[in-house]
Image 1 (tube, rainbow, N blue to C red):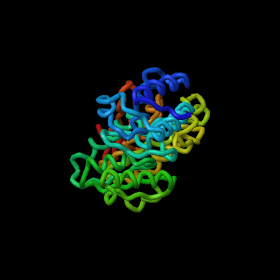
Image 2 (cartoon, rainbow, N blue to C red):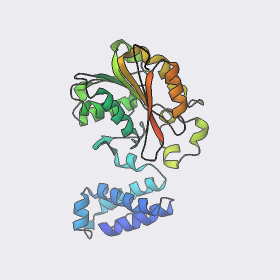
Image 3 (cartoon, rainbow, N blue to C red):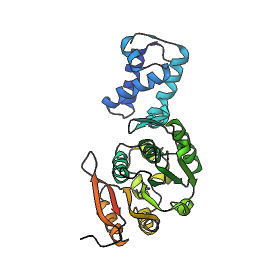
Length: 293
């Protein structure tokens, strides 16, 4: 079924259909507008200035295809092929998690750790779409950057994003399990990770956009949601430089357990950072040469 007429009518009709599919009214209107902009190939300003612009048959057909997919709760970011993170546009597809604003807090923590270092070395473990490594490399032009992922498909997206942001020659990507492929590149001044932290038994309770579409391997396939934090607590500290930091994003209610893992691993100055909702979202600890009093 092709939808023709004006761009404004396209948006209004799309919003009604998305709302009928279970998407909140406020979000449905925004998403229908974004799908229309994508299908028509115009800017928000162009739509605002001329909402009555005609829609061609081809444009209407493309909008209809995207709208039908979104009505099945396929994430908007996958349909548009991009998502904004830290003020930059990143490509995403179904092989990677969709960037969340909460992860910007992890980036801020690592930037604070590295800002005084004239040539810092950092590693992003489980890079996915590359948002952490690429953002840090863009913000720290003299950094020596490494990023790993077990998924070759995810690494392809990350490499594209590095090129897109002009840092492809400054981020070394490696395929493999956690730190294994870059252990010979230590020491690192910071190791950052947003690992899978959702137990499979909890995934079924998530929104369909997450549960049915985002890669399970990136959400969590271990029944112990702390599995990767336990591994990082064992494997990361030996690869840190003196005063280096291990910083991770954590799920709701996991901060205290991760702090205990960091303490058991000998890390010091362990702190948490809360996200926009007041949830402890980042845990960071330092490798020190002496007890901190």
